[in-house]
Length: 196
Image 1 (cartoon, rainbow, N blue to C red):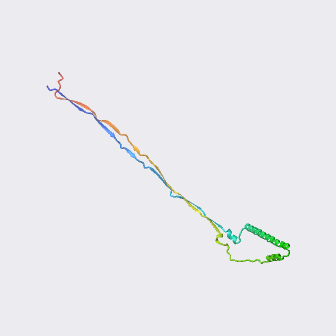
Image 2 (image 1 turned 135 degrees about the horizontal axis):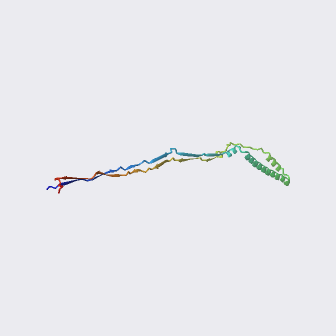
Image 3 (image 1 turned 45 degrees about the vertical axis):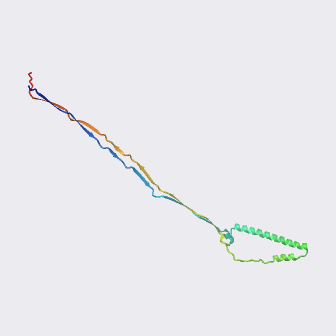
C-alpha cells in the first residue's frame, strides 16, 4: 500500500541592510591678516646757532672812540693827576721861595723857578697804528649744535587666526525585510482512503 507523501517547501526570511556613511567635511578658513605700513619716517632736526662775540673796546679806546661815561672817567682821572702834580710843583716852588728868606739872598731860586716855568713844551712824534696790534680785538666763539632725531616707522601686523570648521554627519543604518518567510505543503502519491 502506497502512502501519500507530504512535501513541505519553506522559504527563509531575508533581511536587508542599507547604510548611509556621508564623508567627514573639514574646511580651514584662512587667517585674517592686517598689515599697516607707515612709509613715512619722522625726522626732527634741531639747530643751535653759533655765536661770535667780538670785543673791540680796546681798539676803539686806541682811536679815542669810547663811551661818554668812560670819557668822563678818564677825564676825571687825568684832572685828578694834573691837580696833584700841580699842587706838588707849587709846594716845591714854595719851599724854594721860603729858602730865599731863610738863606738870605739867593736870587737863584727865583731864576730857577722862572727857567723851569719858561720851558717850551716839547712834543715828540712817532709812527703809530690804531689799534696798536691785532690783539686789541678779541673774538669769543660759541659753536653751534645740530642734532637729528629719527622716529622709525614700524610695520604693524595683526593676525587673527580662524579655527578649522569640522562637520561630522551622522551615519545611519536601516534594516528592512528583503524576503518574507513562507511555507508550502504539497501532498503527492496515492490518494488517501478516507473510508478507513
